[in-house]
Amino acid sequence: MKTDGSFFLGFPRPRGRAGVRNDLLVLGINGLVARTAARISAGLPGSKLVASPYGRGQLGPDKDMHTAQLVGLGSHPNVGATLLVAADRPTAEDIARAIAERSAKPVEIVAWDDVAEDALALTDRGIRAGGLLTRKLSAERRVEVPVSDLFIGVECGHSDATSGLFSNPLAGAVADRLIALGGTSVIGETLEWLGAEHVLATRAANSAISRAIIAAVENREKSVSALGVDLLYNNPGYENVRGGLSTIEEKSLGAIAKAGSTPIKSVLQFAEPPAMPGQHVMDGPGFSPESMTGFAAAGTQLTLFTTGEGNSFCSLLAPTIKISAHPHAPQRMEQIDFDASALWRAEAWLPDMAERLLERLIEVASGLATWGEIYGEGNESFSRFGGSF
Image 1: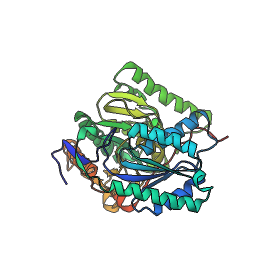
Image 2 (image 1 turned 45 degrees about the vertical axis):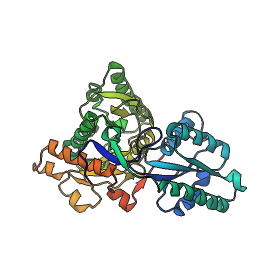
Image 3 (image 1 turned 120 degrees about the vertical axis):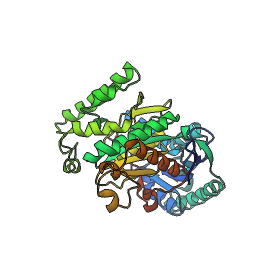
Image 4 (image 1 turned 30 degrees about the vertical axis):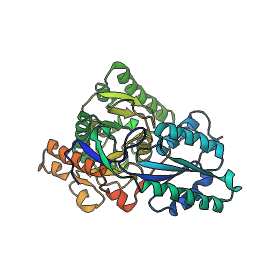
C-alpha cells in the first residue's frame, strides 16, 4: 500500500493520536494476576498481553512510575480497548479512570474481588468481557490520517560500526523528514549520550533544555560510579566491542545521530508524553526493552530500531521496523525489515535511502506487518525505580 506521503491509514481515537493498529490489550496490573491475564489473552486470539510481574509493596517514585507505565500502555494509541486484570477492584478503578481520562477509549475491569479470588472464574469472566470488546473493535475501519499525527521512538541495539556510520544517521534523517511534516520523534537511553552529551546539548531549543540534557547524563553516571561499576563491557557491551566500538564515546557519538538535526524540544521523564511536535529525548534506562517500553508508555505508535549484526527484540504495542546497514546481517536475518547495507557499499545516498525508509514507515503505519509482528517477537518490559516494601 502506498500513499502520497502526506497521510497514512489509521484508526482515529476519541482523544489523542490515531492508532496504526487496533488491538485489544489485556493488561495484568500486578504479579498476582499475571498468569490469569495470560490465560485470558490466550482465549482471545489477536489480543495483546502485557502483565506486570509486580505491582504491590511499591511506594513513592517507584509506585508513581509503575502507575505511569500502566496508564501509558493502557491508553496507547494502538490499543482500541483495554481489559484490566486485577487483584483488587479499587486499584484497578484508579488506573482505569486515568486511562479513560487520557484516551476516552473503552476500559473494562475483571478482578479477584468479583469472583471470591477464584482464578478460573476470573479467566472465564475476562474472556467473555474481552470478547465483547473485540467484537466492537472489529467494526472499526482505517481512514486517512495526516502523517503529522505520527510519534516515533528511535532505538538502537547490538550496535556496531555500521550503526553509527550509517543506520543511526539514516534513522535520524527519517526523524527530520517526519518532523518537517509536523510529526514527533524521541530517542532515549541516557547513558548512551555519555561522552557526547555536550554535542547533543548544542541541539537544545533553549538553555534550560541544554542544562537538562547534561544533568540527566551526570546523574546517571554518578549513580553508576557510586556502585563502583566500570562501564567498559557494560557499555559498550561485548557485542559492541566485537563490532568495532571500543569506548562509550564512540558508541554515544553514533547513538545520538538517531536524533537527526532538528532542535530538541524537551527532556522527557520516563514514560512522559511530549507536549509538542518535534524532536525530544527521554531520560531513561539503557536496556532496549525498558527504553522502548518507556517510549510506548509515552505514546509512540511506531519504532525505528537500528542494529548491527542483529537484534530481534520488538515493542509489543509499537510495531518495530528493524534496520541494519551491516554488509551481511540483512541477508542472514529475515527479521530485518529494512536493508540499509547499500549505504555501507556506497551504492546509495543517505537522502534517497531516507525517503525509502519514510515510505516503509508509512506503509507499516497503514497496516503492513513487520517481521517482529509476524513472528510474535513483541514484548514490553517494566522499569523499577526502587525495591518493594
